[in-house]
Image 1: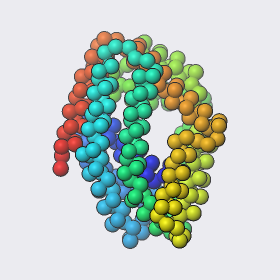
Image 2: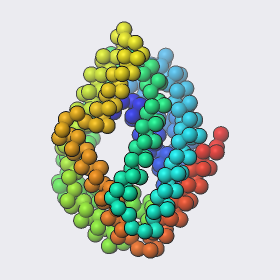
Image 3: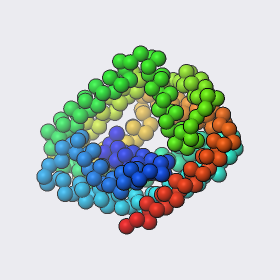
Image 4: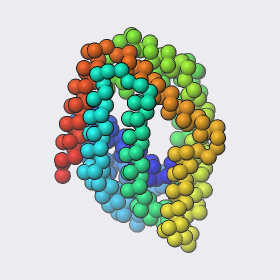
Length: 290
């Protein structure tokens, strides 16, 4: 991903986490997000002494903008989820929620773009090399977590991840819901090798893009066009197989969410409504903080 899309994801996910966990630790994480994002980005590009103050200030401003402009959108998204929670839902309704969340990530990426372009044009060649090495470490960890384990171990890990995320909304899942999740995931198109290959393609693409920008006599508009082109290729892979696989995963995820929700009982749906309503209040409190 570009730095803008990575930053959008990190802030957006923490914003949603704050919405889905009435927990002081999560709220603290959101309130210190500009520092968290700085150290996360620094691990990828190793900011110089000259770059560091500008990066911190850009992140502070982006965080402030996100708090006042985006958290209300997340609250609205949760309100929509609350309204449909009492009844059954369709995969299309689940995908509509996903698409709204992705729209917020896109809005954040657009807002971050000027700062990202400025950073990219000021990168030194050794910082791009640092990024490559970071990717190599990340890929090694991915292989350890997802490629080396047996298919059975991979399936169990995905199952536990789905359970953990689902219980943030419904409370404890019972055997009927767990059975639905296992059935859905058993027929999943999820393929760690495929995912790793696409990750590496995006990484190579970004490194090549940055080498066209960093330390070269290029205008900001040209740099912006190059980064936007890369982001477009992340959102919509140009290779037909990668494009199809990405959309298959999204469609499958929407179907799994709908199947799980439709298997929940009245008490679990009531729990979901109460939690979603409480999470909206949490977001409103975060948005109101100075």
